[in-house]
Length: 181
Image 1 (cartoon, rainbow, N blue to C red):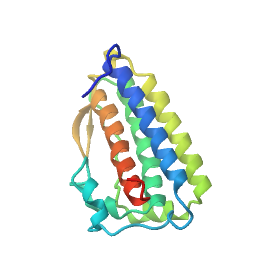
Image 2: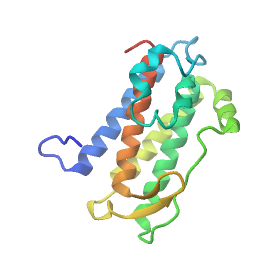
Image 3: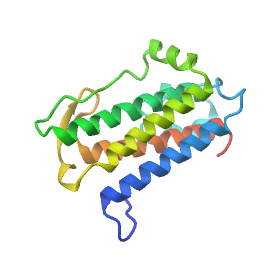
């Protein structure tokens, strides 16, 4: 993982998390009215640049999501990651960590019912909570582990790293979807 000289890994991760959150917020706000509910099919050639990147080889169905579904997913993952951080900061006994089914049709229907402004507000709140939790992590806590149904045993540093990388993946996806890449 590249580090900026003079910054420790935890500070660097926090800075990257914040930067990726801001980038995603800008991309979502650039979304035109007609783009908010429009998705590209999974095999669309425009996605060639992102289809082999990050978590998409394992979750290719996410490439067929419209920006409104991506936004809802980002709200849920920010909330989940904030909760994982809270649990791991306060429990060093390998606790069970929260998880949700990203492909749950009921969850996706809920995303589609949210208006854009409400979705933006919820995303901002969830991102702020995640950043607050991430900023509260101390170096002595980063090796605490928990059990996650989807990833197995993960430590707090991995939760922070995965959260940042996940945001980068969806930023690339949105840039392609919106024709900004």
